[in-house]
Length: 309
Ligand SMILES: Cc1ncc(COP(=O)(O)O)c(C=O)c1O
Image (cartoon, rainbow, N blue to C red):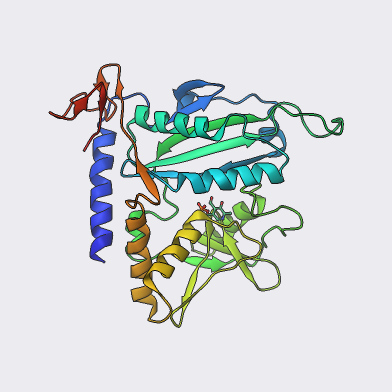
């Protein structure tokens, strides 16, 4: 796959630049109660119900090559999840987006994992008065891109098992369309996969239907058709992107190899499509460019802001 080599080669170049950086935020930046701190120093209050009871929802948009990818899709899913949990985004959506863009710019991270967590807050639901307002908490952090499957493994393929010792928690217990961190079943799946010499567990619903894995949706290509579970799973943005690429390419037939390649190429092409992503203007932080090189490339500094190549 020529385009896979190209996508990864360019990513590795950007990563090498990041790793040389002396910007204190290159390893990660967190927003906690309005303060920006290096990710390793970020703390949460012990009594936060997100920590005490996993009473939270979250979402994980990404930045690829300096462009936020499908940020509005993630924000919409997060708001829907909050509504299902009877919680609210503590700040207006546009303000949250602006803070995230600012954080990415300050970090200089071109390929980023971005996490937003909304928790019930310090007060729990047990013992509350009906109709009582909770003060929900928002936490956000950004760190270098996290792969579910490392680039090197993607070149050849990973190993998965259908878990036997654990099933996915049923939707009647925990709604999987609300992105959540109640990972007991998914963690057990990861251990079972490792015990069986694999990396990725696919969990069933206990009735032989596939659901999803530990932090990923499952899509199968069989006889030229893409199959994916609809029930008992998070409606993932990656899964949705696969649908968008498949629709655009009119994929109906073909063999597994060509379809996977088309989807893979199309998926990364979406990251540069203004319909799906927008470019971040990386800021000058304390007089140095946030790419951490400390050097401004000639001709790109304008009005105190810079776009880095
Ligand atoms: C359980 C589960 N399913 C699926 C996904 C994939 O979702 P997305 O493609 O939106 O990242 C995730 C991501 O964290 C997940 O935790």
